[in-house]
Image (cartoon, rainbow, N blue to C red; front, top):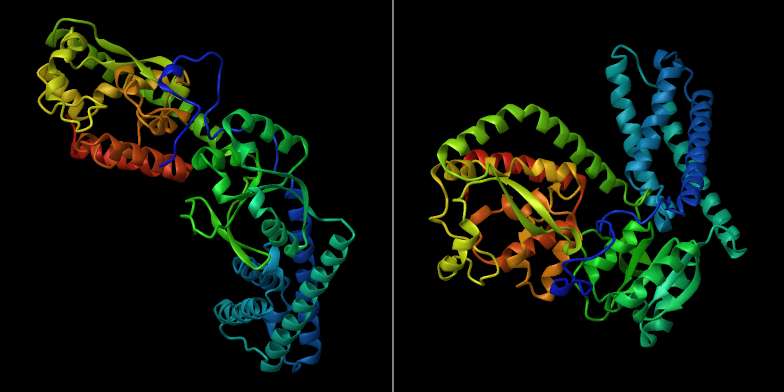
Length: 482
């Protein structure tokens, strides 16, 4: 489990605004994007020229049979689209050894030819194909495309030997691993090591300065020893939000793979790589925009429901319609959460008398299945999670998100251990992975925290959408609600 050393129980009230762990600290497009587009664009242009030339030569030197589909410009464009698409699907435009994967190129061209034959037959069933034209086109494609990729590779190597088209990188490793890690990087012959630092550069007191230096120097990629990352979840997200590709160098212990990483070969050594997004933090701002739009629309649509519930609460028991409580939000900052009241008016004062009946095993949270403080209407509202609807106001104000770790009462957060505070590094949510994985049926706080951390590690817009859809299913099934 990952710990966040920057938060303790004494830091619940903080001054100043700190962004969500997943948001970018500033506007910065991935620096290596121009080089990447230039390389991919050059390869694609060479492939288009190669395919066009192969097509013309195949028609000239093949058996001179009249075939209507071979003369149509639309089909010739389809040939280019299928061939280029198949090469792209095979990952043969990616960096590294992919552009030198000649068996892969031959396979992609061959599959494209077979697909084109099928399309030609379906496109013009009564026409025929010259076998010699087909075979010559396949042969010319293989020769020309492989030659183009080889020529491009030679040109890139020549430019890199002269200091051009090289990626500026930063190495963070312990002194005893420095030489071996440098040798791994230098074998790839496409990197310029701008600076080398030890693991202390990622310590809490130095981390902010380190990332500022990385951005100022225009670093594209960072090579970091796995052992040098002490707070792995937090640090990995830091590299993501500043737009720097993180390459995690292997260790003899063979650490567990990070969920967002892909395997990449550097100097014949396989290491984990967490790619940098094109626009750092863009996914988070899409999430925030989605939260804002959804909260406004839902508040307007559900306003009649709010009125009905408020009226029923007033008729059911004495007390306020809304229940407001201090909760620990982003970075532990206290905020008032809004809920429809489901308990008697003095419920918080009565909780102290019920602590002995707490059903959560480790006592961090407080849960009772048959809580005597809950009103009759409150049981119904909780069963269908209708009491949570006012939290759309919290989402609108930016204090919460639709999806995220649930904000906990201050009483619970004061009992946190240091390792638990990582869940406070992201916006709390109305629903989350914990809630759709068992709701109140999870009676161990540690199990719930593991789910919250798994959410932060694997977060994506698609994961949020999945959780929202599962929430609807869980609510309608009344699973684990009390």
